[in-house]
Image (cartoon, rainbow, N blue to C red; front, side, top):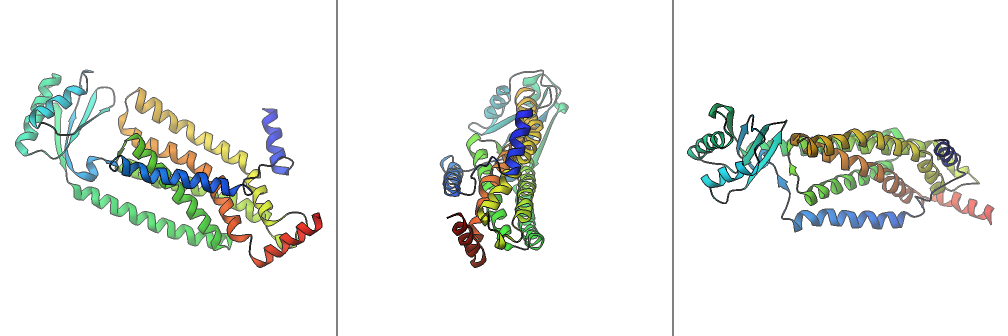
Length: 324
């Protein structure tokens, strides 16, 4: 523990330093490769696995399944309509949620009764419902509207608070990076994209932005009157700020990831709480990616955007001359 505290003190004082800003071309390359893969994966896999809320269909809720296999529900539905895609999710200890494409009224009633018979429960314990695709379209439109408004307000607020529109640009680049990578993981794993997942996507924006603002606040503090510095360049002061907030960023990420990881791996995968895994996956991946982007993307991009400004360029040349 004392060793970690010593490393943290060395990072803050500048005695120990990792060159995040100086190696930005490497981080840009890694980020570009990951983004390309995240965009290519949905295309290769044939798109995202949208939930019934977005594509529409029929849903059955069965209580007290007596721990019988989920495949039994798939067989029952496919006997009524051969070849239909069926998604079965465990809810709690013994309940099941069965989703499929839209069935006719007679098919839906036959499926409800057959499910009750197959699992040995009364027919009234099997609920059936229909969800139209218009509801999913409304959710998507509202989510996109909220995303656009959020990004616009965040850009204005950061530009006003930090007095630099270039910080807003760097933060938006990091946010776009986080969203694309998280969506790519969803496509790779094949989890359903549900309204809960959309909420998770919007939530990780807040976390990623929070971590970026912490770094940028230290950057602003370090770079005040940097034009008159004779010891460090602008990029070096930005890199110092990243090192000074590195331990805090990692600690915050670990504290956030542990409970979310418990929900994802223990709650949904081991205990079978399938309804939690959609939002848990988005939060788990987004938290890790958000921490990564604030260190390796946002700060280097901001330094890149500003280091060639005339005043900062002149200050850098003065520092280099004094060192020579």
